[in-house]
Amino acid sequence: MKRRDFIARASGGVVASSAIVAAPAVIEKPKIQWRMVTTWPKNFPGLGSGASLLAKFISEASGGRLQVKVYGAGEIVPALESMDAVANGTVEMGHGAPYYWKGKVPAAQYIAAMPFGLTAQEQNAWFQYGGGQALADRIYAELGCKFFPSGNTGVQMGGWFNKRMNSLEDYKGLKMRIPGLGGEVVKAAGGTPVLLAGGDIPPALQSGAIDATEWVGPYNDLAFGLYKSAKYYYYPGWHEPGTVLDNFVNLKAWEKLPANLKEIVKAANTAANSMVLSEFVARNNASLATLVNKHGVKVLRFPDEILNGLGTVSGEVLSDLTSRDALSKEVFQSLLKFRKNAIGWSRLSEQTYLAARSLPFKYGT
Image (cartoon, rainbow, N blue to C red; front, side, top):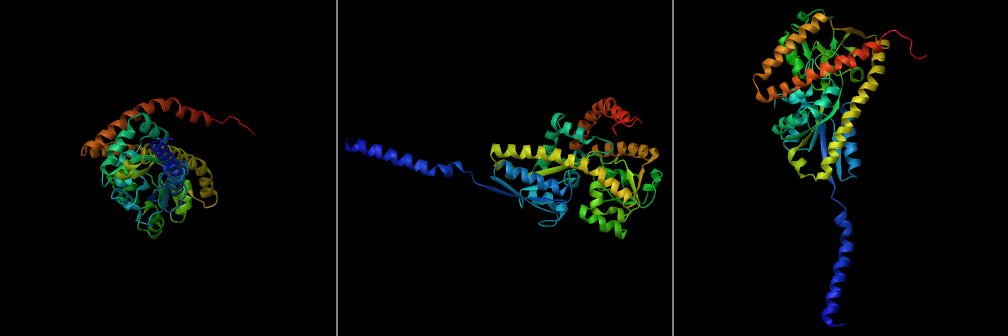
């Protein structure tokens, strides 16, 4: 063999050997570590646990390539400063509810829940097939974040009160913890809405700093012990018929992710969104029974007079608010259109079925 041929072949062998040795380093992707701050107490049932579930899904589905560590409210930043921490890049990810950010971008509160608006199932349909995701992405881009729906409470309860609510007049002078558009309606009805993070509600209600509060529903309200400080538990939750929880990601961090990890984050949010709602549906029944049978809670329905009044005020408030902000108006009009079609179908489907299921026929043993 000629010397130059031997050198060429030997050099090729060295290159090939190097490639084999280097292969594991090429195949093994670098690990990305993110921190998620939440507006919820750490592992609080349904809400905090939903954030932990999302982090678990992402970490495991990515094979550990994207690892997410969850911090509860106050561990890194106070609950309502979560958005600031994500937007400025202090952390990469957050979990909360869109109406907490209405002071930054007013349109955010419309995608959380709208008084007398969409149910959880209808909200998800709006995001997926009604243009809602694109609108939400525009809103959160103004916040410097990427948006995902990441859970839903379903229809909430109307709230805890220390007096009976007989007419719309009873809202006058009432200091009530209630966020978002529901709070704007209570304000228009003569009350004073107070925005508090979840962990601040029990002491405020107990001390009398607020007269009434809404939180979520039996599952979460039992966990907070709200029955210790209020006598009457009203329904339905006209203000939040299907409250969206948000997972928001710093836009720069999101754009740096490779395509396959982005798809994993999307899929993990889709799964968490479904499972959080399922948990609320599964747990509310037993929790309500505990509130009534063990703690003697009086569960009352809002009179039609109040619901009709709140419905009228809601229409006026929403129209007024959207007249001041172009993006809010665009989101509101999209929701109104979807709501109109949803009412037409639900009147024939869910409403009539639920009425039929409640008829007094014998069923099972």
